[in-house]
Image (cartoon, rainbow over all chains, first blue to last red; front, top):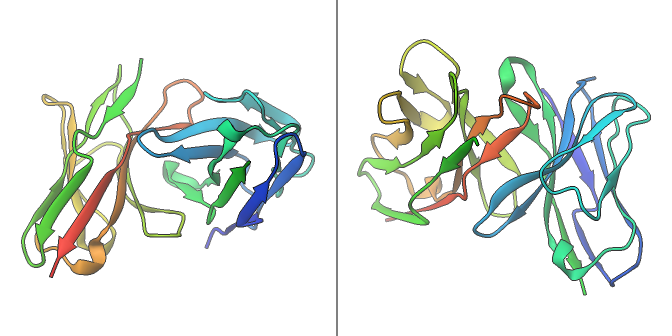
Length: 111
Length: 114
């Protein structure tokens, strides 16, 4: 069964302090992506990666970076977090037959 | 532009009654449609999908959804609601470009009362 892990699950930080949210998968899937969930807006894609060293912007990439140096890991980096990045973040992988499997989420608060 | 609409922020239903959570979509071409459920403090769980074939799709936990091309709808249904079905439900469509991106609706909170 596909498993996606994220760390940390909860994070409170201050404006401008760089942070990284890790995402790891155990199934060697090529496609990984990051979404943020905000009330009344649903989930929106931040970045995605089709394979190692192949990443591209989603719908709301401003203020975020990603890297894909190895297939299993896809960290989300906030170089200088701001309060408008307070959100619930999900990492996802693309399984077979088009379903996506989501990690447990990371709740980020930027004060 | 592709989009998904969930017109109800919340749906309330009594336990044992049938439930419907509505979803309409706007895409060019044939849509790939999905339903996900989010329980409190949990990630999203895949419920069911429509890719092609029968318009009535059966999924996890007794849920089903009906694809209606003429009405561009993909409503989620269950014949008999359980209190444990109370959760946040998201409808999504697969984007035609960036073909693995999901475009989500805003979510519908289902509350099942005992």
